[in-house]
Length: 234
Image 1 (spheres, one colour):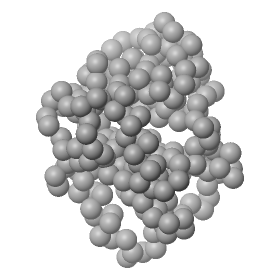
Image 2 (cartoon, helix red, strand yellow):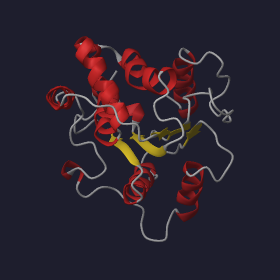
Image 3 (cartoon, rainbow, N blue to C red):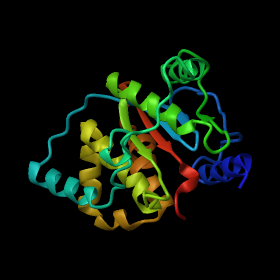
Image 4 (cartoon, one colour):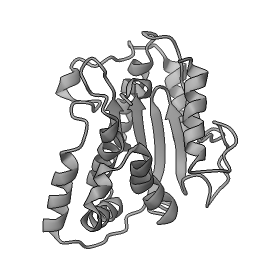
């Protein structure tokens, strides 16, 4: 499938949640827009999402937290993180290469350029898209801003669609206390939410907490990277 058709298919899916979306590159319109306080997606085959998160603390029973996090961990895509030993050695940009592209992505993430909610990076197979995402993931990690990274691999069977949003939820829950509390409460009340399809999981782990409950208003910015989206087995 051509990159433009893939992008259009994804946008059609997203418009099911956000009917007002007209293009794949909307400008941020302030509070109440697409993902309240979200800074956007980068779809490369990666999808990069940035969200603001505050430091709100909600007290939960530690036993419940441990049980729910353990339950989540059973559904994640293992070996897909940027620093996973299963990907050693990962692809990286060679020193002093791709500097302008990395700088543009960094400026986008930090809000130093006109914000677009979706940025799609395309190119032929083998052109180095995964290396760019790997390099940016390492930058975000050093900056303390990496929420999650998932590198899909069909040959290594890291392409189960059921695990994509659960993996994102698991990692965000380890970093963001308010989001962790939401996930623990949600799954405690409805354990079957882990069995939903991708659209249901997107609603459960992204739309409801960040749009409806407004978790993260005015707080820290996190990057979520998904590389190789088109390799997800659906």
